[in-house]
Image 1 (cartoon, rainbow, N blue to C red):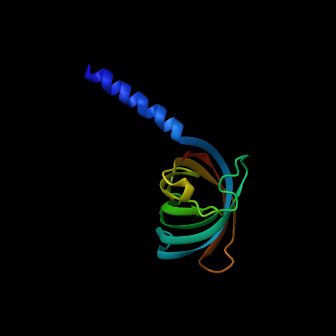
Image 2: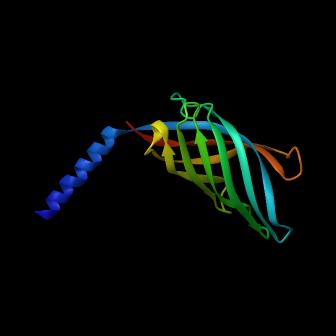
Image 3: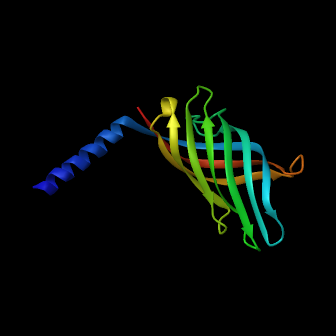
Length: 161
C-alpha cells in the first residue's frame, strides 16, 4: 500500500511540475572579450584565471537570451601536450533584468563544453536548464593577455509559469 501512495505522489509531482514550467529551447551566439591572469605560462603547464563580458544574439524563434549581457569567470589549464580544459561560471542577464547563472566545464578530450543552470532570478526564478557550447570564431587578442571569441550555445531552459 505504501508503494502505491509513493507512486501516486511521484506521478502527481511530475504532473504539477509540467503545469508550472515550460521548456523553452535556446540557440544563441555569445561574443565576448576578456582577460587572462597566469599562474604558469610555459610549455610544461599553462594555468590561468579568466574573466570576460559579452553580449548574446538569439537564433531561436523564442528569442530567449536575445540581447542579453554576460559576465563570466573561471580557471583553466593545459598540462604538457593535453588540450586546454576549464571550469567557470557565467551570469546572463536579459534586457528585462531576468537572469541565470550557469556552471560550465570543458574536458581536455572535448572541443565542446557543457553547462547547467545553478541559480536564476527575476521572471526566471527557479529555472532549470542545460546546454552545450562550441567555438564559432576566435581572434588574436587586441592586447597582450586578452582574448576575443564567439561561441554557439544550444539547449533548453525550463521556466516556471
